Amino acid sequence: MVCDLNVSSNTLMEQLRSGALTSEALVKESLAAIQTRDGEVGAFLSVQEEEALAQARDIDRRRAAGEAVGALAGLPVAVKDNINIEGRKTTCASKILEQFVAPYDATAIERLKQADGVLIGKTNMDEFAMGSSSEFSALGQTRNPHNLTRVPGGSSGGSTAAVAANMVPFALGSSTGGSIRQPAAFCGVVGLKPTYGRVSRYGLVAYGSSLDQIGPVAADVAGVARLYDVIAGPCHRDATSAQVEATPSLPELTQAISGLRIGLPKEFLGDAVQPEIQVALNRLVDLFRAAGATIVDVSLPHTEYAISAYYLIATAEAGSNLARFDGVRYGYRTAEDGNLRDMYVRSRSEGFGMEVKRRILLGTYCLSSGYYEGYYLQAQKVRTKIIEDFQKAFDQVDVLLAPTTPTTAFEAGAKLNDPMAMYLADIFTVTANLAGIPALSLPAGRDQAGLPIGLQMLGPHFSENRLLRAAYQAEQLLK
Image (cartoon, rainbow, N blue to C red; front, side):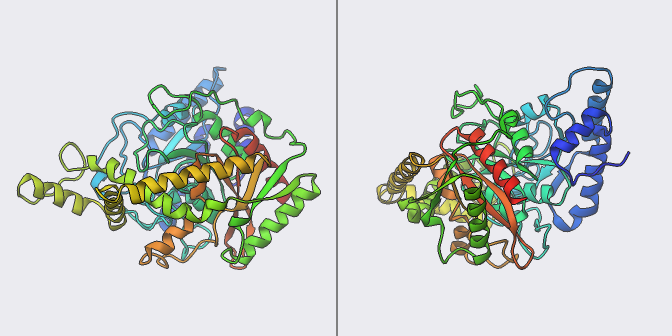
């Protein structure tokens, strides 16, 4: 039986339903693709071959017996390695958790299993999700499948690279300031950051607790909608989970959106944007206008303060969240003898990478006595202003359209020694995380070097279904 991972998830699903394809054959094809390509791409930190094949065979057996199968029906899924799978390592791509085995499933993983998604393996990432290039992994570097000299973006670079290289049809990532959309743009795939609280964070290793969100990655909008429908919804084990039921988005995906009002935020345009990305945006605007959409110029005036506010809030929360990794209860512990204080210092100094230490120090500083009001409190006030900016914009329009990133994928190593340049790679994505609104990146062509261009669409809180319909319409127009 021949199968092709380079087709839409809808096609794979139809082949599974018709019997033209078995889940076992599909999983074998995925495992073969990983074996062939991942040596150069480096998307995976671990692969669970035996468990995946056993799960696929069980799904095929149940389907052959006429039993019901779940919404994913045996499709392979890769999982970012900061999301717990019971009995599997959760490393966060860090030396400090290199040997940690998760004692329970994240809620998102429970729902994947219930939907008969086949868990293929754990993907690489920037250490503790702190980075924009996947170069800050302590366990290996991930490269962009479209050009191995370029970064895949981060921090979910392993997940987006795995989908872009046709190793898996689906993947889960996480986003704190753009870590799904930015690598999705660099790798030429679709990535969705849902509304904060729409997908449970239970079982996600925390970076910035008021910002973190799990989200789906796929080759097309329909694939993202299919995976989103499985993982979205309230969770009683997560105090930040929104108690708002999620209605399925996939059945609504092809419904036309009459009179769609699309906002173009002027702060996301200008000389900082690579010309080819601006051309791609203008092309999509023209296509939308020709299809009957209304284009409205809008302003998000506090966007210029977003990076500063984000890197104060996120690092402050990171400093608190990562305090638990102390070499005592679990994780890496120094082999050096000494007193208790020395053990703490050595374990954390040896276990954490440079970027993680940089952010812990920054967060600790801005929370310290005498600086809290001037830094952290001011950043939270800016966050409120950014939320208000979006609310005013969505009074005028249904969705916003903007570049996902100022440039296409940059060269590996180009920004490693310039933290500010690296942080500015997230300049167009952090606002959605600060405001807690849903946002999606979709491919919109290539630049002259053949690198993918990503455009993002943003919507009001809990508007994922409308956002996905608009993105699907954009996808069809671009074809």
